[in-house]
Length: 84
Length: 203
Image 1: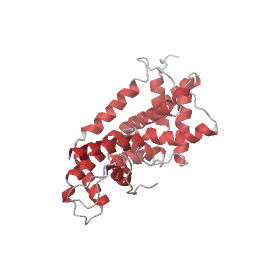
Image 2: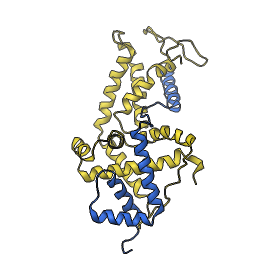
Image 3: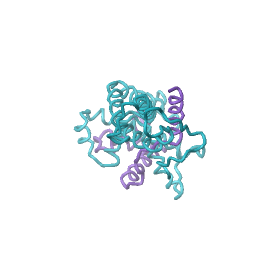
Image 4: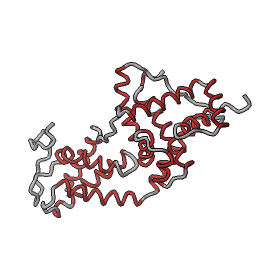
């Protein structure tokens, strides 16, 4: 391989390929990289899994106030109220 | 769930504020309105911490201005109105969002060496049912850590399957800028799951 083994570039291409087809040359370079790079294959598989789960509605994206945040709020309010 | 219960608990301040009808109990306030206010704020600002600060400022401002509350609107409506003004002030500091995004960009570059190799590659993810079950909640928590606008772009694309061209169009981002933001969001979300969902089981 003449091109340096860049996982940084490969991951950006993996991401781009999820949004539309890559041009031929980058696509071939990505495939060549994936053929010999386990971590980047795993990265690609995990991003695909996340997309599947999100589209299947398995991650309910409701925003919650954490118990810690709740405690902080109560404490600060109390302080303010005690000061008047 | 007795969010609205007024039963005094140990440690609860029951001192009636002069001139107010209902006892101002911070615990009750946070229980009754904290969630709604936080969710409202979090949809419009960069991150959890900023949203929490806004809710806090809102409740403090409400406490200080309690004399002005005439009871014609509901307590909730009154609080949301205050929160809305706080959010406007916050968003006026548009630089805040840009800063969050550039922090994220720097963080992503730090995942790789100068030569572009992984410093620490993605962890292996378990496939058993129990782990997978917890993954959904972990994903939600990790998405919330992204800069607000980036999280929004990410969800449009990944969850709602809006084509990238359409997302770019709607947001006025160039295709390249959008690609960079989505790449960062995906990389950060994946990495966050290694740290939170897998936690100490990593490797």
